[in-house]
Figure 1 (cartoon, rainbow, N blue to C red):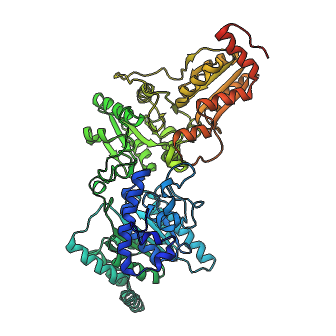
Figure 2: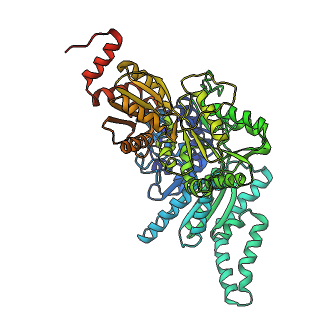
Figure 3: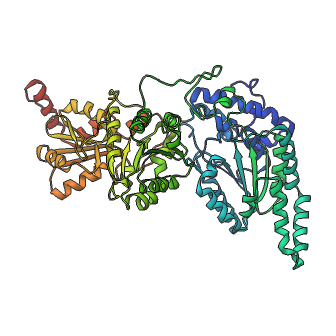
Length: 636
């Protein structure tokens, strides 16, 4: 991109360059940064709306604070694209979320300016507090700043951190980026004025001196804090944060650079725990995103002029299949309730929320609460269905075990994004759920191989009177037609899809199609295992007795996964078969497209075939295939 298009932005290779600009130039820089962000993400896809809302804040933070020495901790990475651009990664933005390119989130290995890697919400205050305490222990005068979105404030972890911070002498600034509340013109000026006053040295000095004088008078000391709280409570919505031990400032206009600079400079001089509340507009500066910030939160590549995204509408995704199933079951069973931890659109609940609003519950970014909330409903005879990403279910493991499984409650888990997730990378990969689910008593765990099987498994899980999970991948399946009926499957029963010789491939979930493709090359038997728990042990034993080689394949980590479960069965039978377990290796798989990730892990058809032919006697396998095809034995 030419220097004439972005004359100021192209001079910024680090925050040090930004600090050399005049304050007046920062407004022009904000405009260039916003336009660059729109142009860049339109070609790569990624998260757009949140970053458009933090342009001015990002500039002001890097202007006032001495990053990277001062620690700037962004909550997740959605709002940090402007931060990436200003910290030396502008020219690499074309590689965003692509293999060997920039991560869509924050990464300590990617840049020294990324103080804390983050993909899950509501971790920023905890991390920044830890950094602040560490700085104090080392005797370093280093600032720690946490920028948390208003959605992230629905998570209990954020309040746990605030509560802990209030019990310390930490030098910590928490910035609440509130992007769901607008400021009217007449109120905005007053709030900006109050923020400047409350963050200034004059007010702070009067406040401290007044407290000191009142506390010296035993009869008046008890009124000091109460007076201050009442004065602030009348004018500002910060009483909660004051009670937690923070000096609350705001709300201020998060798009007003002069106000941001003045407030942040005042706060930079203050010691102790500070809480700045700013109000921003999600999608700011791009009309389609302003009008529909939710749809432009995460985008595919799109037309810059029209805003139209390049989304395929030919085949329904697993997420859409779940959404359709949920509405169909809700129409015939009034006891069904749909629950999501702030992932309505991502989990396919939009249609359900519109048709059955009284039975739709978005509990916010509160996975732990979501599960125990569902448990309480199940105790009273309701039939809750929790729609949750695999990576987010990890956050509620204690509730899964203690509150649901231990009590054998009737809760259905629709686990989306199971397996590798392409451009979102390691932070959002659902590659651990089989390991942590199958060890829990009372659980049933299923993995569909195609779209129709997904619907059947959801029905099976719903009809089962206990905790049951269906884990399905991101995106589309092999294209199997979905039946309208609400049919179920026999629990714990696998299905032979192809009969062959010598090698039996036991495929779990999404890996059935590539297993069949590989099997055609070596005349192998293929079994769609369907259930990870309970396993079809009769099928496994039969395959072991009829084949010399047993291969398991799954889109999940090897340790503790479905292959490990098969190994346990075979070990009990004391078989001497050759066993090959194909799964995701013991590593976090970086972002890229889904096909690249599968190939990297050897879980595509070519990888499955190569692993089998390498590990086994290739001549024997080829001979078996040749006999089937031509009736003649291959010779060396």
